[in-house]
Length: 385
Image: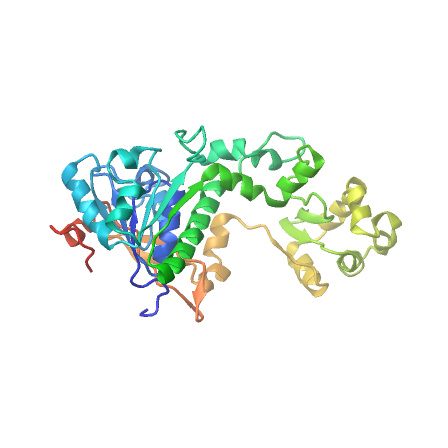
């Protein structure tokens, strides 16, 4: 597509693992030319994480590195640093997540690079505030899920704190970093000047707590854990039907009456004054759920879901991940693509979640390690097609 939003933008991705590579991948999805700079022989740590794909690539690496090209440089090597500096001269954006002080030790800190390229947008991803006492600490999603309080609000009421099923802090940080870089690119169009952007995983773990965080501050205590239910809206959560789980979200009093009258055929529950308003339903949660759960369990999902839709109540099956990815809804949306790996084997790659003018943006499979060395590492170190 000739009208990719970031066509012509040049990005150097010196980051590895999840948050930094995700932020650069977002720019690549939007059309930027993203050059992933990896360690010779080893590459990004995630090339060794997850299930193996063709020729040593893995599901983890494929999840965060589509729409990029790969070169290998040893930043401890002076000649390789010179090659990188040549690329910096033409770059619009650089993303890195080295330990605090490492880039400066290599002579690649923002203060120096900005003299070489004043319009450079430099995004540094860290675990903790780079201006704080823990600047040197490495940041890991699971550690920060614990330290930021996110695990304390996840899980069942009678169970232990529980991590989220995905690396939520890494993912949120990566998307947030991409937003910041897009804002800086917009500003640079007007001013011709770059910016340094710092993002920290712990800051984003705190930000991700959102309304739960504000509730904790108001309570001066942790909000209660309620598993897959909603802490303050009832009934709202996962329920077991006769043939499996489904999500039912009763969001207001009219929906509650429709749920009781039109779906469950229980006018007594609709008219019970203990359940007349959501505040009252929340206060009498245990009594109400004890009445609702056996009723829901009497019906199959194929019967409940149409009735819920007719009553205006959002609901859906709880699917397995493979079922969701291979199902008609996902396949028709174009969110999963199949590509041929250089080793000759077919591999799957997820698409970006946006549409522009009704179309998905094109996807290129993630690169093999150093796949583009010959194309990009010319004597002058310039970006090339």
